[in-house]
Length: 555
Image (cartoon, rainbow, N blue to C red; front, top):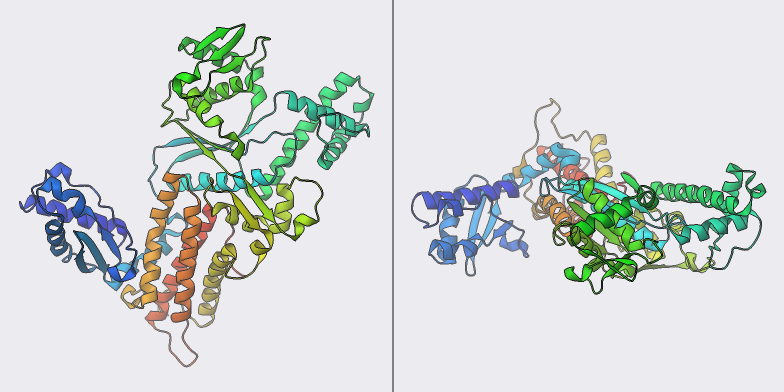
């Protein structure tokens, strides 16, 4: 019996109580589904619900009386072993081993689809994350936003949402000019100009530019600078793409900021917002009255000299997302962008959207990764490429995704590389590889999920060991965890769930055998346990995939 089936059984019990007059509750007040959850203490049963406390007042009875009536009705449901009433009216429900264990077959049959829900079905979101300037490599901060943003996109999709992952390329403005001048200077073998980009990577971009355009240095200075800017930009953007590919992060849309300026979208955005009555002019400058919507001050969109501000581009970009059909707009921004929250919400309000429904701004906090490798580096920047080379994509992605975005992090590189149970990513991946080893050993001993004659050997009532009950119970939680992680925008919930599942599996592995001892015959208990082993393997693989982390078969 799955949590959904139990929920439906509870709803049916309530409807029956209304129908026979026991419960004085309007028929339309009977919930279509009843929320059930795992009790904090295992001895309290498999599932618990407080539905009696929620409905008793409307029904004109006490929570305990309602709970006792529901307990007697639910106790007759096939698959339910016992129903107890605790405290003022909580229901604690224990399932028959067979009813609970049936989930193992459900998981294996569903395969990669297990855990996917329709919790967010119908929602359409544009999820923007990273959005670094194409003037240099992605650094450690971007690495965190990449891990979190991509995991969030995967989880939202698993919960039924339609998600477009988008990278906003900040390729307009003075910084791009400085980058172009820096590339040209390196191409000439000169120091970069004051305020330019001195990083070693600029030399690499300069070499790539010269290879693409050997005659660059023969051009007039302004023409050479413009060409160095364009070719250097393209080379740096391609380097960013390669880095993200190596991290397993892929974007559906790469949106160029400069296209907003070149297409006239910025001017059109100002005009549209003016039509809605939110734009005003002072001293030759054009302003957006964002204070009407909670911002701390009104914002300049067009300076008195006619130059648009970054804020004007932000407004045009927001309207672009709206026009492209994204009711939901989620921004994952860096720790230094707290000030953007109110101004972006103000843009949403000025555009006629609901700032509480159509836009979400998530702020990722700073991260530091210390270790011996750091001591060998020169300079202050730590780039994503170096992190991947040092720690590997799996360790990075898992370690960064297992904490809430708004938590500052200080991680140890050496700890992330340890092959021990103290290292969470190793602990979870090792559990998956162990399930694969069990499969290999089972095949060697001719243990299969069916008998030798091909008949069905699955008998969930044989999963009666206490570690099996705990493991099955943990497996039932996975769809709910995915749904919660999606609704709350918290990928770390999936990581922490996987660690709990791995702990339950390792304990079961030490207590229960899938393969018989050499002098024993293969029985249906062994075959049924193989189903459970494979169900755990599937959920571990599904969960790791949501985090963009590999599920190795051998370690």
